[in-house]
Image (tube, rainbow, N blue to C red):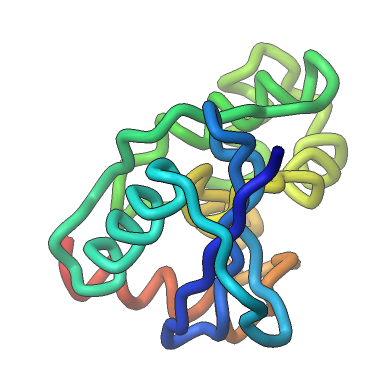
Length: 151
């Protein structure tokens, strides 16, 4: 059984979903539906509230990262980007030992189902520009600014 909870934030309504054991999805959704929360959902929402208030710099939650081995390598590399810092797609490609896979890194970022928790918003273009984000460019900019403010 899957559980869901919702958090209203400065980037929109965030839907948090888990399977009772691991977090499976954190995404921006159009509106909050009825909550069906597990202890894990409640814990994740509490940690996200702390993140948005600037008191949490990392998350301590069990994650279900469903994807290819390549995607999992990328997502694990994202977890190593320190709070308040950014890396380029090229940096991530080099970190996972595949320096020519810059576009594939972008594709893996796009498939990340655990936004904020697995911080794909911290990945930017090689020239420092903000590039695609599933939650929208405004949300990405706000998350980066939030982290700079509380770094």
